[in-house]
Image (tube, rainbow, N blue to C red; front, side, top):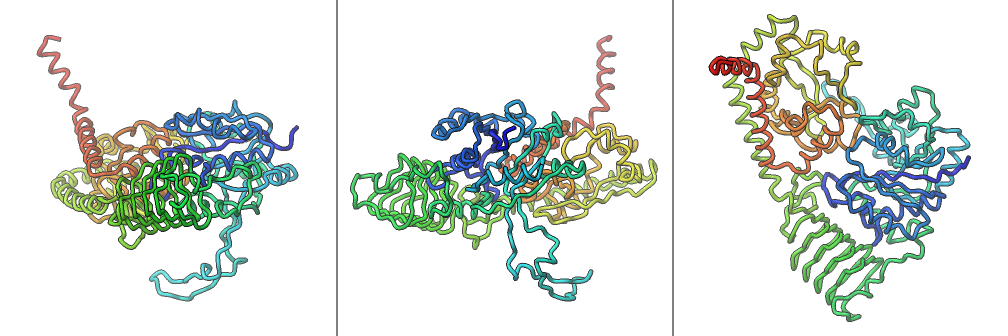
Length: 594
């Protein structure tokens, strides 16, 4: 049996999102790093480790990559296959779908955001000697002493002491996974044929419970995971400065910027430090480029412009006299003449020095944050409008529905034993916990009885949902069918714990299987009504829930909120009128002699 695997899988998924902003419609492996795509570095490392077959899995909206990726990697000794995944099933579920394409008794899995020059043969040797079924590559991240300081306080938040913890006494692991795994093929037998399944949160817990050997291998080589704007900048800088070695790419030098000039003159350009210039880029007279700077294909830089430590993505345009420092300019974006931008991310058309600054959270505007994006110019107004509308709507609803609330409360009390209001801790925006209110629709000991009905769960992933849950009371079934059980949450909305429209507030436990989904959905106010409720509430697929939550966060606007509210209103009216439909049909039949 061959010790070194000859198959590797790169999980690329959907569009590139950094710090909550979609910066490219392409997956992260297509991100340019020093005039070369990330996937070229990844494939080079895998080829150096003896990989012969490379499978790259991308989202269904990346159809053009099926033909592009094999051409991009044609110079490497790899058989490359790009697979489109119609329905995301999590990292583990994706591997199960690729099972028929994976050759050999063991295989690599690499995250689409990882850049490393590690010698993977060392990891393969370690895996073989340990007799491991799964090996995880990690890096050690030690906190500096000042980050080990902690304040100890009592229940009343009175300071008791301030400690500086010694690393040996810290209970936190200093090992961070980097998105590189080596698996024996038999782990695929443990992944369900259908549904959502995550490697980190589900597979490794399962292996541990079954006493299957899983080990960690510390990566001592260069390693960056491009999960944020800062890390993207750092990776681009490190590669341009030659801080990582990639043997197969050693002779593929970036283009010399002086080779391409808009007017063909050699005096038109001044270059200081490492600069990579893509094919088809044009540079005007008197341009100053200060490295480390990457300029991708198709970019146009106007005369007299100054770029200092910048990344210009494909087909971006920089106006004459513009000055950019520590900036990233998105695909097809335009920076106007004379613009003066510093520490900015431009993802818009015709950006100027007056572009509205935003933080890494696209919905959180802060004038001192130092990043820029014209798409978020109206975010502040949207948030103010949303809060004002939520307050007025929720207060009006509570006043108007007050008589009905009293009737519902009496009905609940007469129907079954227990309190009228059900309280549960949920996560609001930025993970701040609050007590969410609902009319009680289940028997008083519902949480204890949950173990007995767990096998009836109809939802994959961490959710629990049963269409005909035996714990639901008679009044509770009516309240659920009409969504009247959610009415007390208007008080949460009035208090500011929730919004009227937004992703449904969940507990920490319900969000444990997909940290990326969790972090993005928690970047906005959690809502009473969301895209998932109106589009696929009867769809029990966890991936559909993820898709709708992310779609709402990326595309949220006043217009989208209004549409969700109107559809929810229509659905509620239909659910209220549904019990009367047989009576109407019967009356119609009598009138027509039926």
